[in-house]
Length: 344
Picture (cartoon, rainbow, N blue to C red):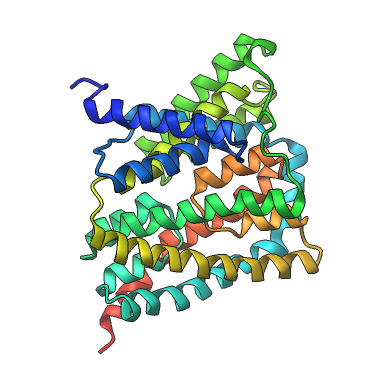
């Protein structure tokens, strides 16, 4: 089966136009947001698109490598300082579920499984698998979660630029020409090897967590001493933007009105809840304002990692909060859902 299908060529063309347009307009994160928005608009006009498949998944591995290469002994010594902030994550999840489930179940009329897994702020793929197995609507879940990610990832950079004056146009690392080729080769091996090992053992989020764990081990032993070059992170942004944007391919006006409408409303509510926790963390002095903001925004794991890298945030702090959120949702969401179903 050939890789460059007609739909993929359409997708890459649309995404490229979106990226160039965002660059020319001087908008933040053009290689991430440009493809997302362009693919959404193309889908609304009936364009048939397809994600980048295994190439897109491989590019995500470099986000795990970027996080893992930032983990040093100094970073590990700081983890106990995160405990006070991590304590709020389960409360955050419970509040999101308490608001999101009634919204989807009674406000939009989705069945129990669809409403429950649409409300859970876990990884998109995990929620689709759990939701479909429980009898939910996978298409609705895909559109709702994609919209949640799209709205949060689009709005967050605008807030960061307007409120903190963060420069999101800066390079996310050194250019490849200034780096040791051996280090680049080691990072490619760590990304591919970590992904495949994690996939083999069934680890969730294998394409990011596997490379992160393997690279962290290599970083702590002094084998990997730098982050991936800027060009690789830029390429990863482009493919992540495509991955979110193509979820809207084949969308109907009914899906736009109900599923995407539900996703937009839910994303707005999530943003308000997140801002409340962000203010609480910030006022108690547990973490810097920008780090707390990125840690409690329930966007996609890959998307939030990209933003954290470019913003120069504390990656260990931000990733630990998103990782705990996703672990708790994956472990507890099916159990709580089953308890709901047993109630008369």
